Length: 212
Image 1 (tube, helix red, strand yellow):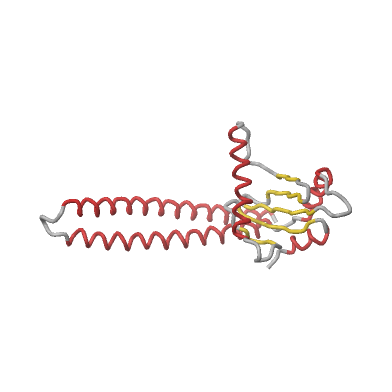
Image 2: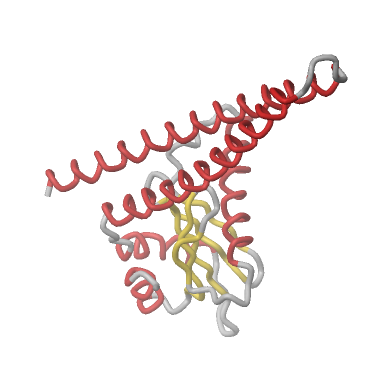
């Protein structure tokens, strides 16, 4: 499914060849690109652009938190990356036409028009973020359960080691248990953090609805 906003952008601005909406973690949730290109890799590299630019700003002691747009221009392609929501962005790909060059000044003129066209319901974006975080929680819980099962198995092995057996066996199993328990603590912390983030996002939706 392609958001109506993407279709509206392409209809209003024929110069836009492709559009990709992605989260800060690199997950693409809407795009006009077909499956013949590596879409996960596309999202990964778009997110890296933001991450590397943020690091550059940090090195220079500049604030990157409220970035609005990033613009690239080459001989045959130009790209605009715009911030949508707290965790979401949109990348627009412009290809130079044979008859005319797509200059940076021309791209800048498009930005105000593009921003007018991106009138996505804020709640819709927040819901997409909640879904993504719920999927992450699901994965973390699966990993957590797998590690818990391994801990139970190692506990049994440790209890079954008879007195007088090789001490190194006990030490190794004990070390593995300590490492796994620490990993479980960290996983549980990550799960709780994401659950709090989901509740905060739900609060934003309620606040938006009250304002309406």
